[in-house]
Image 1: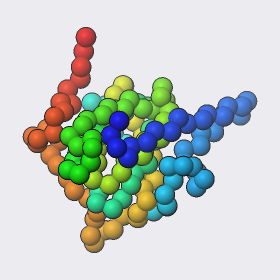
Image 2: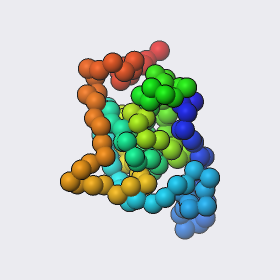
Image 3: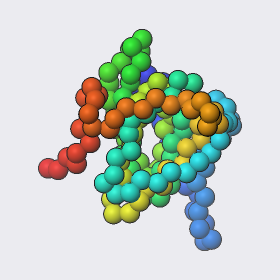
Image 4: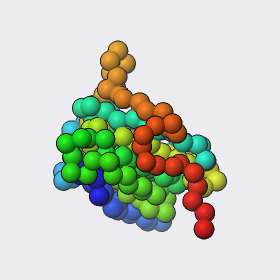
Length: 151
């Protein structure tokens, strides 16, 4: 596992009216602070990558569909520097992933429908000075290939 990355299995509570799934609580061990909540969608087969933040911690949950979330530890002082980790998450694997600052991450929609991701980052988005570092998804030094792996 990449240092600082945490996974929380999510609890789904069903009843005859439907269901409820808690994603992040202020009394969770992984919780740091609240910045904002937003939803993002990724279409099937589309790659949205790579980026990281200098200050912000992200808390990702895929609430509809399935997505592959990939992390790359770009922190030179980290014991897991250079490691890559894939997570297949969504309706078939309801988890929350904690992504620390300076860990590059991206996503790819998998399946036949868009995947909807909820993020509850520790910082609100700063439109004047975004806390975001972007890296081109395919032409870079990251040892990862976004191609589908059949077999």
